[in-house]
Image (cartoon, rainbow, N blue to C red; front, side, top):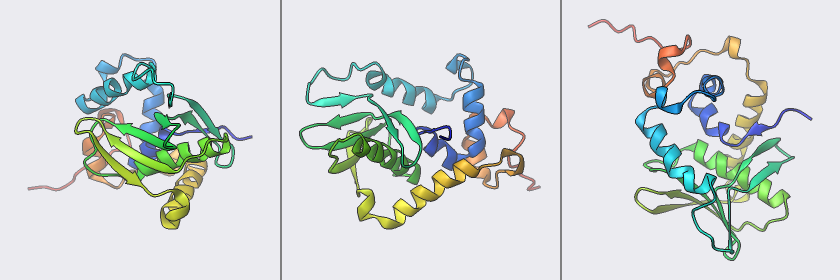
Length: 190
């Protein structure tokens, strides 16, 4: 068996594969030393899930560890409502439903269904404004499913030695840019 891919890394890989390296490199370092405000706020917003203190309702599963053998994925779900059969991925503030968010909830969906849970609905929840974004189940969105499978294959085949970021906007938003030798340099001269 190959090493499983962390579900949380799907979104990071889309942003920039090298960010996964830095995320791992700094895993034991105090986050306040390198994270930006949005990352700190996102971590804070997730604490209730990670510490299983969001709710004590018996009809909900929180922070359940999951594994998907089919795709070789491992991680945790945020929330599963047993009664409505709804899987929820929580984000601090959703302004755009990025593909990476959908890939994360797809990964959770496949893991949960392999584990015997019936999942009929997928939601991305924006904590700050309490908005829900309904996401089609993978079998109802074949194009997104193919993109999901493609990203997993890209992660398995990734070669850091041959990767260079080409999107300067991603580098501008990256908390690791000051430490990265793959950063896109803006050579525009005014």
